[in-house]
Length: 240
Image 1: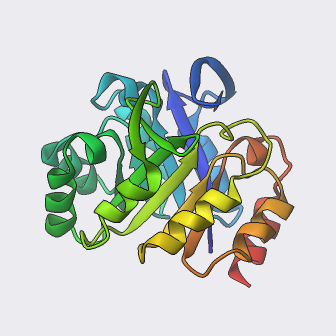
Image 2: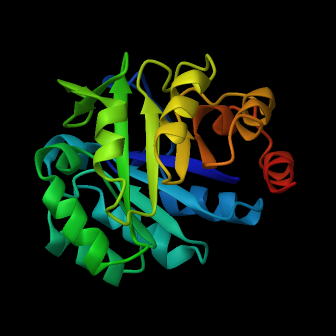
């Protein structure tokens, strides 16, 4: 399993939201590239980036901050938020991004996701963000009547690299991940799954690692910034 430290970008700063609420943001750094370089120096193998403003705007907003991170770091990075068409996907991959995460567009235009996965093999992931088991889109602001499991199954044969599954009610709340729902989703598809939302301790990482062979990794943000998860220890645990 891989530890993905989260760098959520709002107005050019590294923040963490509480349950996806933009008006409940805690700023952890105003120098995203420095923060990313610190994660790399501590042994992280990947970076998980989110353009929060972009997720609401439907187009990239924090592009300068993302480019600064890509210029500074040598480890691969994945990015979600405001990526809604093939031109933007190609532009980000050309800038050195290792993987794009398609969330809202996976609901609005699943054929685009399939086309992107075929055009850029290994470079496209699907972000499934759920509140009480139902998918939310547009930066988590809009609920749908689509069960998360149904959306995951829709891309079973699409060739996507991973599914990032986020339980919105756990995100930033430091209450532990929704392991039951994450495992249920990973059991429903053959696609590697990355757990997100509420990963707040070494115990959470141990539980996720023990929960299923298809879990590719875990994303954590606030717990890393607060020092509740030690990166070196976490990387060693998940590699073992």
